[in-house]
Amino acid sequence: MKKLILTAALATSASALAGGTGAPVSRPAAAPTSAPVSLQFDAARYTAGRTTVDGKTYNYRAYKVVYVQRPVDTTYQSMNIYIPEAYFQGQKVGRYDARTAPIFLPNQVGGYMPGEPGDLTKPGMGGGTGPSAMQVALSRGYVVASPGARGRTNKAADGTFYGKAPAAIVDLKAAVAYLHYNDTRMPGRADRIISNGTSAGGALSALLGASGDNADYAPYLKALGAAPASSAIFAVSAYCPITDLDHADAAYEWEFGSVSDYQKLEITRDTSYQIQRKTVSGTLTATEKTVSAALKPLFTPYLNSLGLQQDGQALTLDAQGNGTFKTYLASLIRQSAQKALDGGTDLSNISYLSVSSGKVGAVDFDAYIKSTGRMKTPPAFDGLSYENGENQLFGTATVDNRHFTAFGMEHSKVAGSLADPHTVKMMNPLNYIAASGTRTAPHWRIRAGTADKDTSHAVSAILATRLQNRGYDVNYWLPWNVPHSGDYDLPELFDWIDGVVKS
Image: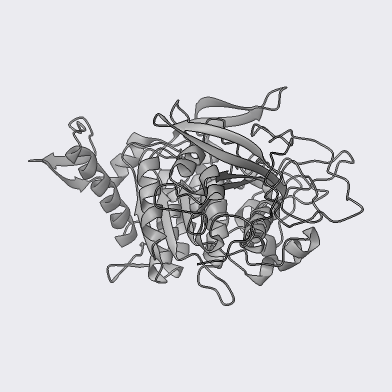
């Protein structure tokens, strides 16, 4: 166990936490300070707070810290830390105390846009009126540390962009390094950090777990003045991770290429900088169908090149896109349906399932896809006219959008440019799992609902299987009829974390 050394003064500070997760498209970057920001955690500078979960009140101390010495924008390069008051009184919360508490690290990133630090007093990513993941974590004795991160829309007053790839993952790594650096100064175990994120945030959670301490990120961390400490974490929770972006277009058309009608989600910001979501329905044009047909066959050679295995069987596809990998995905859907059926869900009207005597038999995968429907038009991620958020993610300080796949560049409808391969590499966790000089997190929990159509289910299946094949502990599941969302099964999430932190 670690030795905990807290600073002596513990009077309440007058400093307040910043609230909300909205991020303006354009704001001045913070001017460099004449003196570097101190990276030493100060236990005396806090705001007292309390939260109620399941009828019980929990007191906590809230801290807001800047986690790099030379921040570009302190709105995002800061972290809200919440510590149970009991830990400063030598008491326990549940099974944990100040020396044994895991650190729950949820990010607030959506769509690779900027995310401010999470606010424990506000609703969480799961929505609804119940407690947020941060509140539940605190009630179960976790230290909660929610870092902000720059994103693709950050723009300075001089017109330059400062949140393009790999800014978001670099920021999250710097936040982790801060926690390791201050391990003896604050409650919580830095060797038991569990990241959590949804969608793009889930992808960043996975990337954070895959690439701990890899040298590719060192120059970026050094430039920001990150703490000289590890960026490795212990476990990953990733809900519907939109990752493997350089192959996601082909994967999407492999799965949804037979569907022409779509319901596309458009994400914008209103005049108050709040995220607005609108669904637009339509049918693929002849040109879009041609693009889909060109992308779909690209997935088979990519999938086969990965050498994935499940229960000793190679997961592959043939030239028509059929094979053991497709059968494996169908089996995951069948298992999910069986669990739902066992729980009392009526599946009698699900046409793609064969149900008899309380058992789910065959799953018609192609019929399942048509029932689920397509959400995105091709290419789903590397838009040929820079119409997708991922194009903006791979921009530069002076270029807002770029292509990041050879297909996108070859078929571009704009006078565009291609992102450099190293930047693209740094945003894909598959490149870092078990890589030399890398500390990949040993424990993983990955969720992607059967009703999710934001990205191909192949993406999460590839991530989970690659991890399993490399010997990591993976808990992978497709929750029945759950759409693209996260934090919907908090009791199960924290039961899982409690289980793995014992190891």
